[in-house]
Structure formats: C-alpha cells, structure tokens
Image (cartoon, rainbow, N blue to C red; front, side):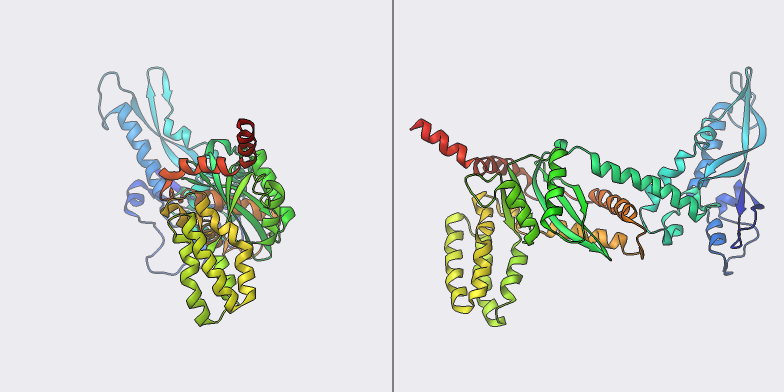
Length: 437
C-alpha cells in the first residue's frame, strides 16, 4: 500500500502527482526526491514534505484491520476473509482527497469494505482536526506549526484551513453565546474590559459554587461604558445568571460600577440584590498615585491590614486608623479611600476565609484570562470585521477555560452562599423581625 502526495507550487499551476511513498519509506520518515539539509524555497512544498503521525496511524490502522479479519499474510485459515490485493482509492486528509492504494478484502459474499477507510472518507473529520490542533497556534500565519500531527500537511492550502477554521470558530462563538449558565451555579462574577488593537470587549468570568471558573460572556465595546456593561449583565441574566445573591469583583471602572448600581441597587444596603468587592490592588494604586514614596510606605501596612484582619471589627479599626493617617497626608488620597471603603470591607461582611479573601480581593483571575487572550490573539495584525474578532475571541476564551483550576478554599463557598443570601435580603429580614415583634 502506498500514498501519493499532490503538490502545487507558488504559481498555482494545476496539481500533478509528484511522488509515491511506500509504507516502509513513510515509517522511516524518508521522502524520495528531497535531500536532507537542502533549503526548500516554497513554504507549501516544505509543509507537504512533513510526515505527520496521523498519516502513519491511518496506514497502520488499515494493516491492523486487515490482519484482524484475514490473519497473517498467506494464511488459509477457515472462516477468515481473504486478502484481495489493492485498489486505487482516496481519503480526506487536509480537506482534500489524497490518493492511496487501499487494501481489498473479500469473502464468500463478495468484497468487504474496511471501516478505517470509510471513516477517513468523511470530510467532516478534517474540520475537527484543524480546530483541535490549529488552536495551539491560533494564527494561521503559523498554521504549519499548529498542524504537525494531522494529515492536513499533505497538499494543504491556506484557503482550506481558513474555511474550516471559520466554521469551527463560528461554532465556538455560538456555544459561548447560547450555553445555559444555570448548570454552573454561579455565585461570583469578575468583569473587566480588554482592548485588542482598535477593538475592545468586556469579558465576564464566573465562579461556581463548586469553585470552578467559567467564561460566561463577552460583549464587544470600544470602552467599558455603563450601557455596554448593562447589556452584558442583562444577557447573562437571560441565560441563567441568578437575579440576586451574587458577588461582583470589579476594578472600579465608573461605567461598570454605574451599571451594577442601577441593576442591583448596590447604593442601598436594604434593597441591594448583590455584593460588590473592589480590587484592593487597583485601589491601592489610586491612593499611592497622590502620595509620596515615604507616605505610601507608612500607609501600606494599614491598608493591607484591612484585608488581613481576623474579623469585621478589626478591619473597621484598621480602616479608621488609615483614614486618620491619609487625612494628615493628602485629602485626595483620603477621598479615594472613602469612595471604596464599603466595597473593601465587604470581604469581612461576607465572613470569607483567609484563602477566599485573598482570591476575591483582586481582579487577578480575570486579568490572568485577559493576559492569555492577548497572547493567543497577538499574531493577528488586522481584524476583517466584528464577526472575525468575536469568533477568535470566543474560541480563545473557551480554550483557556479548560486551563483554569478550581480556586483554593472552595470548600468554604457554601457558607459564602448563605451569607450572600443574608446580605441581599436585609429588607425581608427586617420585615420578618417586625412582624415577629
């Protein structure tokens, strides 16, 4: 059995058969007609000389299937089918038909078709392979590095890869847009904006009651304005995000905070349907921007002592001391702290464990996701349109979701759920106490 490779040079002349490779040469990694160490000018030709394991595996599977139903060569065992030579055929590899000499098997009822050969005649197989392997490099500028393990390297064209990539990424975008959030049991949400060249998007990362992280939504917007944030929140709610008893961790952007205030009434503790925690790192940077290095060093201990306090009472004492100190140093620094004081103390109102306080005190989880997205999409030099941008962004989000680990201290999350229910239903609790009195 042999496989025949079809190549096309840079001038796009009609394809022609170049060389037939035997199984022995293929297994040994030898390609007749090409000398090792000699530079090949055509990138397409270079790709076509690769010997991907998928092709070897296809040939090996055919041989194993023939051996399982016919026995060893020249065997004449009763009840087994018989080898019947070979016949010219083709399979789908790289989105194109590749010529092969398929083995033939016959029995008393006629010719028997190999299941391995039938499976590789399905063109849909290529789409899945391109996506799974191509996602490693994302940018099609490096597609010859991203697809070393599939037979697409033989006779593969950029247009074929592009069409299959578009189809696969469209499925990923649709999956992210439509999947239900109820099954995740989201109790906390991180929201942040990210820019990619001239385009931007707002990304939402959810944490389930089991401690697992999920990318739950994205909304394309040039800025992190309140209207865009509100649209994202409404879409999340339509897909199953709870209407109340949620924890939001944000960096302090005015547009996002305005949207949260309007939707969840965070400005009124009695009617609030969610709890907001401000990123401690972002707020500390805002404070130190207006302090001298010596003043920042003196105030640093008190600021971080608020987060590390053993309970709410101790945290309030540290906050009071910090207020006095900032009042002496700089009125603007004091105003910046007071603006976020309630959101900083929310960690202790929730009664979080030390591990959970550390996790929910910053926006590092979503900042880490944004960093991975930037690494995945940095090779793209020009976005054709909004659909192109969103397809790639959604694909990168879902692939990076698989790399996310369960948060530390997740076993304490059920207690956080109970505390969220208490804080988000204060008005009901007051009414119940009043009726009981």
